[in-house]
Image (tube, rainbow, N blue to C red; front, side, top):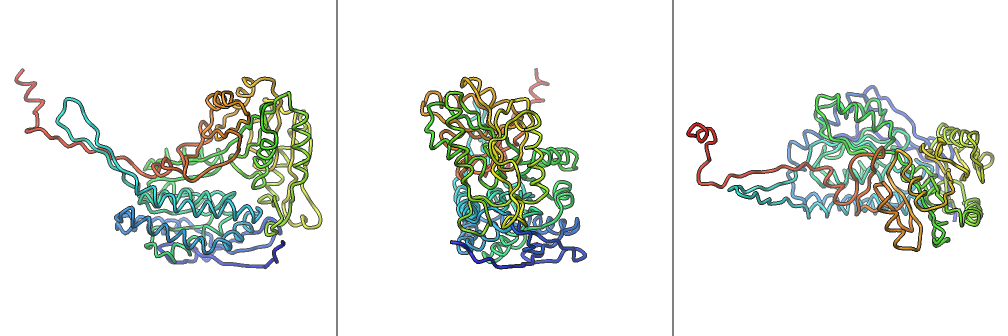
Length: 506
């Protein structure tokens, strides 16, 4: 069933201390639907002073105790209220997320919005279970115990590929822990994070607890790092931006802890004894979901020689059947890339791979004409005969492009899997449980999927090793990223020993 298209233009200000404010000088910018090129919303364009207002509001709210002073049950009740309103507005959020990103609405309903709601519910409840420890200290009359405390103001920088889902997994944990937040909306996809301001306001969350500003990363992001009132910064983004944040944090007057979920080039190993149908479906999902604009996209297929030709034939056949079209069409399985500039970047990776000696098996060019004319559509693309010295083996394309490498032994496959600077995710397909266990132990990755791919759950930790990031999101581990540990040492002796007097007596 196709949805009737409606031309919508929504206007958003900056959400600061539960008020909608114009940016300094009235500056604005437009955001566009990648599928049609239509402007869909007008956003306030924040300045440094605007960003400071948001930080000041978050700092004042934190210091007042209106949020950090609440019990975990009270904060949890607010977050559940936010989730309730999101559920009521789920279809609205799904439509806006589809129009802002170009991804299929079936995907925004099933993944983006559903996981965003779950993030608030999970962290609202998981914070209640946190408790410190009493630590015995041998031979000393000490009562030693630990507690958890929020950092203060957390700056959260949202990505453009999953603008609501990846924002909420960060801020839900930060808020449940008692912090206040200032969010920088992704410039290309800011709408749903702004709508979240409306939802927080309706839920009655105290002013200054959630603030959202839209604008340039070079302005808003830099101020979040430079401002001494910001205690911590969380980013989901590229390796390049992550490096800039680390440098800026080190150079700032106040060194800030960072939570960084960065790039990936995740391998998917397919063994001869795999369930072929399951492996085919997972490989297809792994590089085409969200148009391949996914940090954990399993964009490197390491395929066993024994099944190579059969598997590739079936994979190409399925790939060519993917329904590509408008984001609001219920039949669409894959939408448009985020922009024409990004489409050109993806094309550049493909062209250079072919020039380096790889072979094009399907796709390899934009979709144009007809319904595709005004969008930034790109064909699902499979390239094989990829070797480990090629750029496309190592670099994150961030598009629907699969690089295929043949291997002859599982040991070789594991070596190839670990042969990039990234270590975010990895997958292995085999029906042999011994091989599965051995492979999962040998691969260096934050997550290893076994007979599945690209799955993540709010309830379980997610993050990368090596250049794929620092820290973890999701799970209790994700909540702990937004808390600092304080140790308390209480001397329980009858009198305090005078160390210096004892030395003098001797």
